[in-house]
Length: 214
Image (cartoon, rainbow, N blue to C red; front, side, top):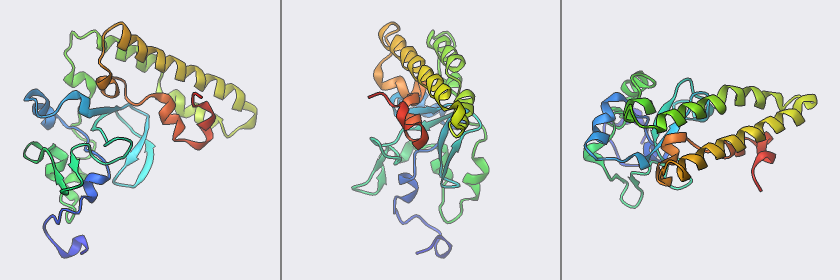
């Protein structure tokens, strides 16, 4: 049944399978009240290539976003139960999920990208990890990554570009290891604190496949 022919959810799961929602300021209470944990979140850094469910494309994001993690290696929301076609936290679902009506996407489309939260909005202002996050953003900026990726198409620059991308991959991993081993960051929080490892993001881009650690 097409969405034009109905006005209610038929629990097909399509929206949940296309990816977890982006968090807005309205969702901070869910963290505060313990309904979700930081281990369920992933940061999409400004300029990082990510899937856009509205256009069904992968492209750089214009601003830092906090999203609900996928299930395993899939896009599907980690709170979706495929066996029962149901949300496991339905009573405490996210702002975007409450707006989503597939037969009338206008409210969700209108809210997309507005009043969203960043890591700084939900991490204690005195937490030393904020300094490490700032260093990570400075040392491994995605705007440089995008410029380098563009250079891969120019044969005369390819070797230099790959060397620099490899350097960024090493620095990204080194900062993560420092936070884990020296600051005691728990591994389950890594994707929220630093986002996806750079080598994994690059690994999804065919022209940069040779950069993956062997």
